[in-house]
Image (tube, rainbow, N blue to C red; front, side, top):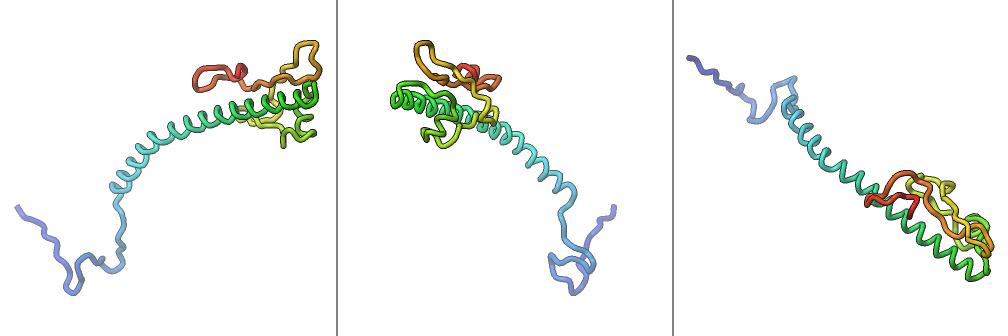
Length: 142
């Protein structure tokens, strides 16, 4: 049995490459790195999207809370409810109509009118989004 021994050419220092050759990663090394990155992504990506959903739910709840508070302040100041969400903006109770983060629209709000004998058209608002929050409540019931 013969053993193959590799020798350095005379005058070539250790770790140097032969003329015309460059040092590079092997295909196996690249595949191992790609497999590790893929495994890490399978752990991180679902958490990222769950975090996005949680943040949209939180923004929706906050937008509803603030808008309902502003509607109550409008009623306290004027003795009636606003005719539209645009009136709250026009009278400077809000800077702009809030965005429903689930539908990504300012036009998807469901307007709940007041019961007679109260005046106005906007007693409450609800999200027009279909589906459920992360804790199982329908968006339209928030």
